[in-house]
Length: 398
Image (spheres, helix red, strand yellow):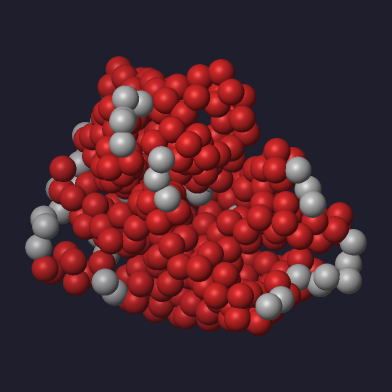
């Protein structure tokens, strides 16, 4: 059970570790033109530079979580930060795209080793009354990390270049590692999970699978808009690339609002499944405005911001659901890993799906139908999750 008092400094350090890990996703898109100009590689390699971390997460999320549960969440976070720092520093000296891709591969392993373990590491440090707030704040690690990196990168690249950007990210990873090392944490309150078929089968149960499905459906819609927002603004509306980048960063940052709001809303009585369902419904309404070409651009961009903010309710509530759907306290990391595997599936297939639909129809407005379908799946998953959690609560007497 959690300690009576929440250890806020250590909890804040763990959240900061997640934010720094997420900067590794946000650093690649703005640095890509400089990378291509210096190292001379094509679009195919560019796609791998951008998507390598997501592909790794889609492939190993569950197994990274199982390993984190086995070795202990704190060790997993420390190991992940060490890998990130090593990949950043060596990547800063890369002389070919092959070396960059190897570095991104190592970054992907380090990223998931860290982020799948943070919730399990935080829960023993958090009083029961603060868990929903802490997990809601944790849900904002991805938009906080990517948006902050998107905002500061234009200031770093002109003077230090992409190598300087890689070195700074490595220094941040190392700083988090050292900060976590000097803060003492209590021992795990449960036995380490074994890497066996029974635990794997236990995690692949309805509750965790529905969480992963909801996250995948939500992420397809969110990342499809985020991925093509700058392209649409530059090519269709003639907005300057720098302005488009700032507007896209604001879109990503707006997602933090919904994440952080889930804790207070749950304290007021909102159910987790209802927050996920509400996010899907509100996002669908915003998409109707985003793709309405007859509306003024200002109103359509405001709908983008509203979509990001309302959509943040989904990941915040999903992270808060992990302790309730994990088969045991010793499998929280694995349950979180499976959910992040779903999220990265959405990250990987969302933009290509939207591009395929728009290219096939010749109109951006047709993309709305694809996103409505994915959000309908998210809504259905939330309703099914309600039944699963209710059935489990009845059987356990909770």
